[in-house]
Length: 437
Ligand SMILES: Nc1nc2c(ncn2[C@@H]2O[C@H](COP(=O)(O)OP(=O)(O)OP(=O)(O)O)[C@@H](O)[C@H]2O)c(=O)[nH]1
Ligand SMILES: [Mg+2]
Image (cartoon, rainbow, N blue to C red; front, top):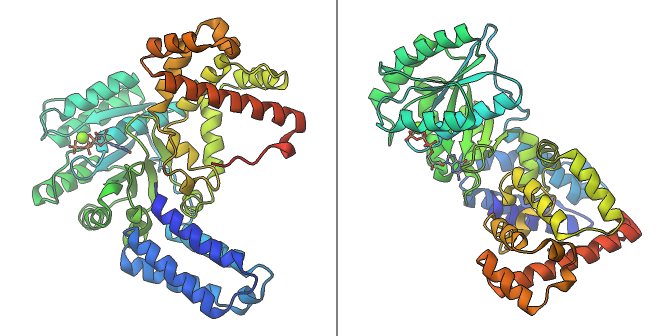
């Protein structure tokens, strides 16, 4: 997400913070470079222009240039303005005063409505809510089935019928009231492009079901086009929120930066993968921090606390202290990491990691391979990798469907890790060697 933009901004910041004094000229030059980076990331040119004007207005002020660390001050100003551009504060999902809260999802074909319906229901359920999924896409033949399968896999209440979309939704709301479900998520039909018939159907649906939330689902990969489409949906239907999906793709990210400014509707969620746990609540400050290459420790810690088993973490800590870290523990760690979501999205949240990710072999596909290799080891080998000689390596490679090179690489990594762990426990945090990524 935002790799290119982050990389460019980091290099502008490096120049800024690398020099002691700043003059107006230097600030202006930096502003120009930031503007270019934004435009290349597909940010709307008006939005980029205004952004730069706001940053410049604050950054060329006397206090900044005369401050002890003017470069840092400018970075802070960019961060503040970026947070403001993204919507300032987190806007949570609204709740109806009398349940159920009806959440209507709208958007073009393939933007990710049905997937979001599943993700959202899962998120709500994890918070102790009782959501219900409703298939109201009567146009695409397989659409209802798609949501039904999703609902089944999540063990989520589901409703649909053979009636028209409005009837389906009204029936569903009635069932929800009866069964005390507190959220009703309406998955509506999409179109290839904006189409009067669809708009009329959605307006009708909104008037009759009176949803608390009308969320526009925008495919971030479509860049500026997503902003244009969202604008029309907002004018015709009236939106209460936006969810940007596919931010895990190599989207240039411009949509995220322009959409709030263009619509004045808050971004409430972002989709970061196809899996049903790949959803994050949108926090403007955390996102700004990620875009500027400063990481997002808060979200990372939140994810970890949801995925990591504290008991196991404690045991691991004891093992580390006693230098007993083995391949078995490694496997356990991998499982926990996998629960946190796509590995790239995790690494991006570590400060300074975003732009250094390129070319690093840390894709999700590597995890199953590593798991297979460890699974092919005997218990004795996992506990004492020193005994893994040439013939054992061959056997492990064959057993895991990998190559001897793969096995060698993993063993090497493991030895490095053990060394690090040893140093780590001997010197504590301070003695930790700087890892060159
Ligand atoms: N990478 C990635 N893929 C996503 C994300 N959200 C949805 N998708 C994928 O996008 C495709 C379309 O998603 P759907 O949820 O079926 O889209 P839809 O808006 O319901 O589409 P229609 O029902 O045709 O209108 C699917 O292959 C999803 O797996 C996301 O956040 N990241
Ligand atoms: Mg759908």
